[in-house]
Length: 224
Image 1: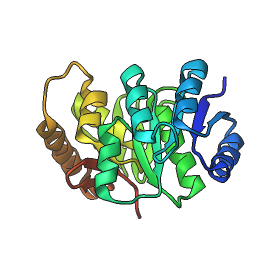
Image 2: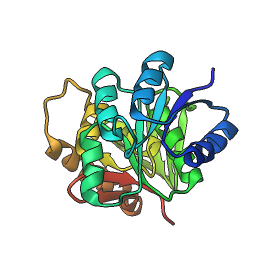
Image 3: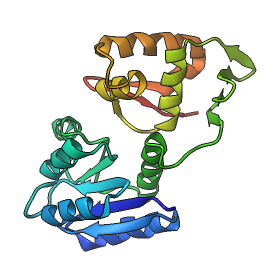
Image 4: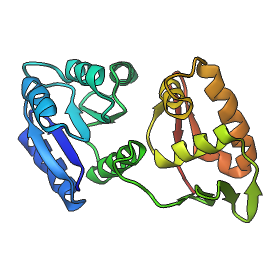
C-alpha cells in the first residue's frame, strides 16, 4: 500500500510542484492550504509523512508541527522561505525531522521524503545498505569499506545504519539518541559524539562522510 503524504502550504503552485514529483514515486497525496485544515486532515487521514510550510494562515506551521509531534512520531519536513540558522533550530526544537528552504530542488525533497520513510519503516530496504565505498550487510551484521572488513560494536553498527538510511539529512544529537539508543536511554549528547568519533576512526578515509553541523549534530553525505 502506498505511503500517504500530507502537503500543507498556502501556495497552490508549491503544493502542485511537490505533488507532481511525489506522485511519480507512487505516493498517495493529501493537500491542505492552512494550519487548521492541516490538523483536520492529519487527524482524519493519518498520513505517513507531513510536508509543512512554516508561514501559513490561521495556524502557523511551527504551531502545527508542535501539535502533531505531541500526538505522533510521524516524520515532518518543514518548508520555509527563511534561511537563518535560528529559524531552522526553532523548527527542530518543535519536533521537525528536516528543514528545507525555498526555493528547493524537488528531487532533493523526494530523496529526503524517501529517507525519512525508510527510517520510520514505512519503506523497507533489503538486507544490504551501500554508501560510497561502504557496504553494510544487515542480516550478516558485517561492514566492508572497499575490501576491508570492519569490526564495529553493536552501537557503532546501528549508528552507521542510521546515518546511511538518512543520507543528506541534518540530524540533531537528540534525534540520534532517540533512534539509536531509543527513548529509554538516559545518556547525553556526549555519548553520540564519542561514538561518532570512534566510527569515523574505523571508517578511515570514509569517515569524512560524517559531517559535523556545529551547535546541532551531524549529517552523513557521500561526496566523492
